[in-house]
Length: 390
Ligand code: NAP
Ligand code: ZN
Ligand code: ZN
Image (cartoon, rainbow, N blue to C red; front, side, top):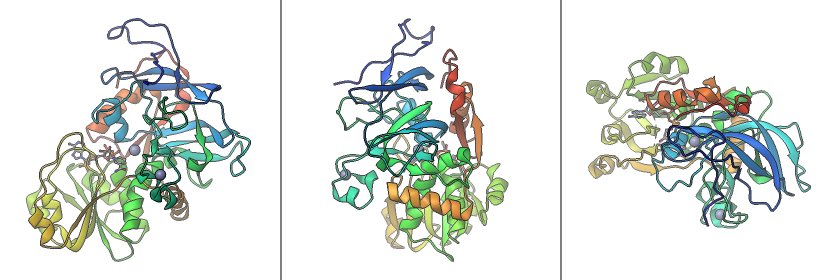
C-alpha cells in the first residue's frame, strides 16, 4: 500500500494543480499525536515546500522531541531530487536532528522532558538479527528503518518523515544523548556526518602515528579531519577546490593536496595508511590508490547517483590495498562518537539557515560552497505560507 497522500499546505501555483491542504501521517499508531510544521518535497522537481506532518502520539517506548536544529546532508539533496530512485513522495528529509524531549511514553525511564537529545539516520531495526544484536543496526539483515523515506515497521504502510520539521516521535532505543557541553546547532551534523566518518576511523583502529587521507572537504570530510586529528593521526586532505587549501590547514589538516594537480598527486605516492573518501560525485579512485601504503585501505562513503570510473585491480593487488564501503554507524557507536566529541571538544563548523534559505543552501552544497555544514533552524518553519524551491 502506498503511504497516505499528502499535499503541500501552500502548493506552488506554477507547477501544481491547486489542492486542498492535507496532512501527511508520518506515524503508524492508531492515534495521532501533534501536528508538526515541516518542509519536504512532493516530487523530484517540486523543490521543498511547506507541509504539515501528523506525528504519532507517543507510545509506551516513544520519546517525543521538539526539534531545534537539523543538519543538511548531501544525502538529503540526492533523496529530494530523486537521484537514488525508489523515493516515496512526499518526502521530508533530515537525519541530523537535535532537540529537547517534550514527552515520553509510559515505559521510558532513561529520558525525561527537557533532556537534550539527538536522532541520526536510524529510527528502527529488527532488533533480532546478528547485526542488530552486534550493535550494527545500520546493517540490519531485515533492513534498518531510515529516519526519512523508510517503511515504518510498526504497520508496514506508512513512511517515516525526517527532521526538517518541528517535532518527531522516535522509539527510545534510537534516541541519543547530546552532551550538555556541546553547542546544539553544531552537534546536529555529528548525527550523520560525524558518525559516518567516526565509524571507519574506528574500524581501522586509527591511532597516533597513522596517516589518514580525507578526500572531499564538505560536511563528512571536515568531520573526518577533526575526528582523525582528535584520534592522534596525521591528516592529509585531498580536495578539488583550490580555495579550500588554506581552509583545510585552518581546520587542522597537516597537508593538503590539490587532487587535480598530477604533480602533487605523484608526490603523495605511498604516503597514506587510510583514505576516507567522501566525494558526492563519480570520480577516479585509481590515483588515490597510488597514495596508499602497503596494507592501506580506502573507505568509500560518498554515494554518487551515477556510475564511478572502473577500479584498476592492479592498483589494489600491488600493495594489498582494501577497497571498502561503510554506512553511517550503529546506535551505540553514535553515542560513543558523541561522548568522544564532548571529551575532545569536537563539533561541526556550521552555517545556520532558515527555511527560506533551503534552496540556496542546496545549490551551494552541490557547488561545494559551504564551510562545512548547513544547519536548519527549525524555529523558522513556523511560517507555512513561505514557498521554497530546492
Ligand atoms: P558535501 O558536504 O556536499 O561534500 C562533498 C564534497 O565532495 C564536496 O565538498 C567536494 O569537496 C567533493 N566533490 C568533489 N567533486 C565533487 C562534485 N563533482 N560534486 C560534489 N562534490 C564534489 O556532501 P556530504 O554531506 O559530505 O556527503 C558526501 C557524500 O556522502 C554524499 O554522496 C552523501 O550522500 C554520502 N553520504 C554517505 C553516508 C554513508 O553512510 N556512507 C552518510 C552520509 C552521506 P572538495 O571541494 O574538497 O573537492
Ligand atoms: Zn546524512
Ligand atoms: Zn536487524
